[in-house]
Image (tube, rainbow, N blue to C red; front, side, top):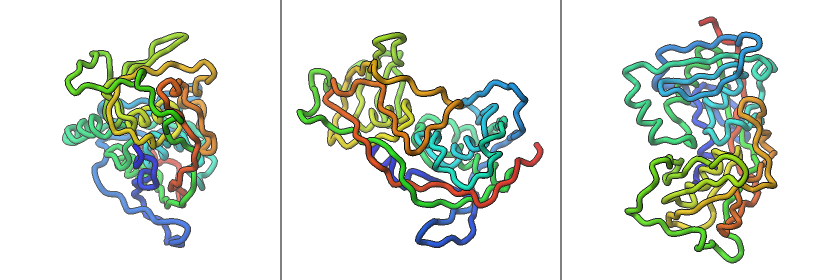
Length: 294
């Protein structure tokens, strides 16, 4: 997971930009790769309910600002709520709601399905991102370049007395993983959190890098593993009672300067999170137009 929040993760951009100063920004390479078979970008109906989903054959966002799709096109999911990473956008990019619905061509489905299984939600430069970049360049005449910046994030480290091996059991290579456990980013498996007070989530054959990746996805904050532990473990996390739930996706966008604590009690495992500033590359919009008609 360490490499997952370094500057190289931040962008896989594709529209050309004016020649900026090399000391302060860098241009974005031109579009290449597959495109959507069908894509619709239209203003949302007033009062329409918002939706953000990952259908198996494309992309679907309803009643959301176009800025959310731009973030999705250029940043891994761990950063797609960080509105401050997108600069230079005219007001309508965040104020006006759009429906963006796209489908993958049948001939591209094999590659699409392979990426969905193997890349995970932390990946940058995915087939989806390249397709969205091409669509935004065509329909909105989007031109961007990137600039260095910093965001708040976390490192996952050991507490003073090291890992609690009574709570973190070394995983056996041939152990049976319950059928209700799902694969998580970076490898390993985890059950869904149990409902209600005292919620728990159990991990199987999970490395600390995978745990950091899962914490990143579930709590809007970039987490990097610096525990130094290289093994895989079975363990259970319990919900903390002193941390409120994050806002629903689509209603609140997390500022780049607002790190959020994990809702899970890591201390019982002998772990803790420490806030750090992470060097990243933000995105500057040089030109954008309202979407052309479908």
